[in-house]
Image (cartoon, rainbow, N blue to C red):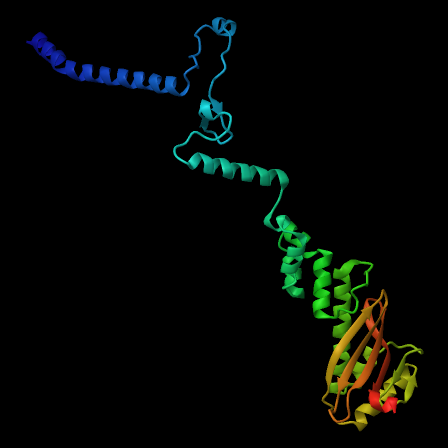
Length: 301
C-alpha cells in the first residue's frame, strides 16, 4: 500500500515538475536571446583564463553615447541616439546647444550686444543696479559695466560732463556725486530748520572758509561765518524755497555744486554756489555764495 501511494504521489506531481522545468528553460533562453540581440558580437567569458587571454578581442559594433544609451550603427555619423520619430533630431539639437554653452560658458546676458545690455540696464535706478550686482558673477559683471554707470549718471545728474573721464570709473564717480548732492540737500534742510548747531557741524573749522549772503556781505573765517548764520536765523522767519538745476562736479578731495533757489517768484531766483572739501572721509562746506540773478535786459541797458 505504501509503495502504491508513493507512486501515485510521484505520478501526480510530474505535471508540476514538467511545467516548472519548461518555464525555467524558457526564461533562460529568453535571456540569452535578448542579450544576443543587444550585443550581437559579444561572447560569453571563457571558463579557461588561458583560452580567453589567447583569443583575440573583438570590437563591439555598437556605439555608446555619453547619455548612457545605445546609438544605432547607422546613426554613428550623426551621434544621435536611436529613438523613434523626430525625437532624435530634437535630442541632438538640445545636446549640441548644451555642449556649446558649457564649452563657451555663454549666458543670455553675455550673448547680448553690449549696446543692448547698456540700454536695458539704463532703466534701473541706483539701488536696483547695486542689488543686481550682488546676485551672481554674471550679473555683477554686467552691473559693473562702466558704460551702464555713465548712462545712469547722465540720466540722474547732468549731460554736461560727457567728456569727463573719471579716474576711478563712472561707478565711483556716480557714488561720489550722489554723496555730494545729498550733502548739498542737507545744507538747505539745516536752513529750513534754522539750526545753528547743525550749521556749525556742517562747515569746516578753518580760517579760509568764506560765506557770501544774498545781501552781498562777505564773511571770512569759521567763527565769522557761523555768527552770520546765527544772525540770519534770528532775523528771518521761516523761508520756503525751491532748489532747481543742481549741477555737481567732484574731484579727488574737492567738489562744488551750482544751483538756483527760488524764494519769491516776484523777486526772481538766486544763483548759489557751494564748495566742499573732503576731510577724514566726510565732506565739509568751505564756501557758500548766494546772489540774486540779474535780468539780462537790465545788464544790457
